[in-house]
Amino acid sequence: MRTFWNINRTLRTLSEWEPNCWVQVTCPTQRDEDYLTNELNVPSWFLDDIRDKDERARYEYDEGWVLIILRIPYVKEVRSRTPHTTVPLGILIHDDICITVCNYETNMMIDFVSYQQKRNQGFTDAVDLVFRLFLSSSVWYLKRLKQISVLIDESKQKLDQKISNEDLIGLSRLQDSLTYFVTSLRGNETLLSKLKFKLPVDELDADLIEDVTIEMNQARETTNIYTHILDSTMDTYASIINNNTNSVMKTMTSISIVLMFPTLVASLFGMNLLNGIEHAWWGFPVVTIASVGVAAISFWAFKHRHWI
Image (cartoon, rainbow, N blue to C red):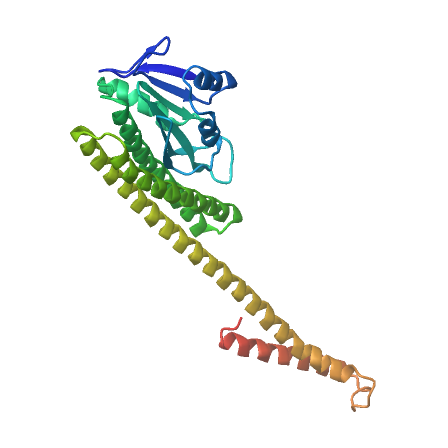
């Protein structure tokens, strides 16, 4: 789906392409890609790069085209191992052409358009649009991190009551999501540092870049904090599980040893050898009482040492 936006003073839709408008392409179909390559002469190889969900954040310049890939946060609606992840957003600029291409429909882009319409100011130029997309992505990273923090707290509360595999797997998936976040944020920071020298930046853009830098640093530091919290939490619960396993094994071993002593007494008097009580009527009761007594003494000794 492609949408043409007039970005001069306000943000409103257009029926067709006009010079200096913003072409937003979301979940492009083959018809959309044909339009971009045939009508606007977009490099087809760059569209293939955007289609790769693992494509890193980067800047390129090719035959007059400024080609940028920005990593933005994305939440998968379907059940997935990593529900919170990042996807590439392609930005293409050439003279009076400004295009964004994303193969996923993200809440960030929906909110970005809605917020700009509420501002009722539009964009000064394509460079202003680029850095505002950077700012929006940083803000949305922080929003997603708050959601992850809530999920971490909920899982920890459940694990405090009962340790279950499902909750531990959920924490592991959040750990994977934070890994994607911190990697993408580092790539975006490196990309931003390059764009400050590659794009024509005016005074207003410089102020905007400073805001983006602050938000990115905050998002990266927050991601690192949550990563450390998750690492320590997983280590703590792993230690608890190992301790519980050791306690169970110690108890089972102690019980086995306690039961071994009466078994030894019964085995000794049960052998086909002369022991003096094989014909006595009281032989069996004496052996039974001796077995129970030895077991009781062993149990008391283990209990006294807190082995059971």
